[in-house]
Length: 142
Image 1 (tube, rainbow, N blue to C red):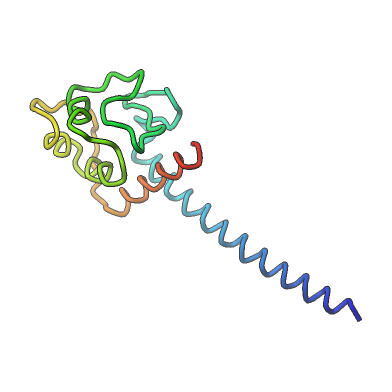
Image 2: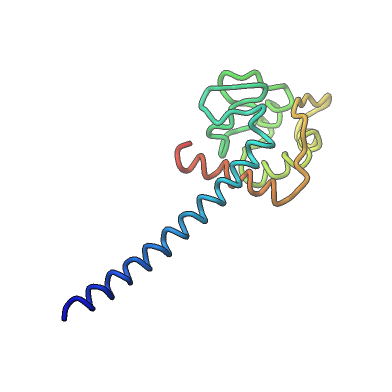
């Protein structure tokens, strides 16, 4: 007679595992979609590897970094001055920067503004998801 109880327990365990797996897959798919946005908008110029700079600086550890201070990359005078004026990269500053890079720097550094960032990300959700991905990468150690 113990068999039905074990079967019930097993079905309950299977159901719980299925729910957890489904939640994990959903989270992984969301991260994958955010990563795809990063790849489509940022990866052509920015690496996520520490010390590996491309046309733009590595975005490894960007959250909490003062603008214009990354080691091994020749930041323009505008980024350095923005950093000297207190710009630290976080969700808020990255959001404003990605929306209008030259305008962002122009409000925080003296002319002439030197910015080689060729794109703007106008879509609010896209910016938020890219920033979420960068934060996730940093929090999970890359």
